[in-house]
Image (cartoon, rainbow over all chains, first blue to last red; front, side, top):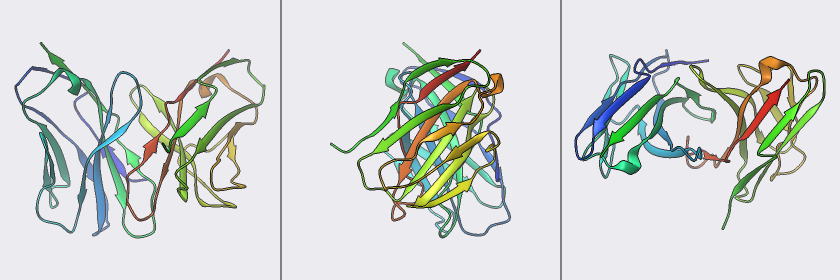
Length: 115
Length: 113
């Protein structure tokens, strides 16, 4: 299995501020996908953002953006203008390229947004 | 609306008993997965299926089995429950055309005493 490492178990951020979550991964593949998933306290996991390794441009989805550093095997998530609804556990995940649809997840980072 | 449902949501069982967790999706997704979530480990893949009659082992498959007799269902069976299998179990499904976009169920919390 691919190794995905999230080194920050917990993070806290003030409402309206910015927080950055770190993720590193290990692979010998040249083509792959990276993801950030959000698990709110109600526990249903949802996809936040997806990055394809062959695309140089960093993915963005509204207030969520990534910094993808392929050579460093780093994939961080930035949450801008944090909102109370962003409080959740965030998982970084890796998927190999063509015809391999299973994901490997990191251990997760719990983000708490303070009012 | 299409959805993915798991049952039971909570179960307590005894060591050695057989347990089956159900997963049903109505998206007609070809890919289905079972993960377990444990503190400090994130989600670990137990078994997965890319279509009817196709099943594959994940990284933590010992003591678990699955079968895929139709597109909608992927039941997970613990053949002889052990305390180490106390966990929260998540089922997920996806379309091959949307790589990595998994739709998750709400989870099944299993306690093995």
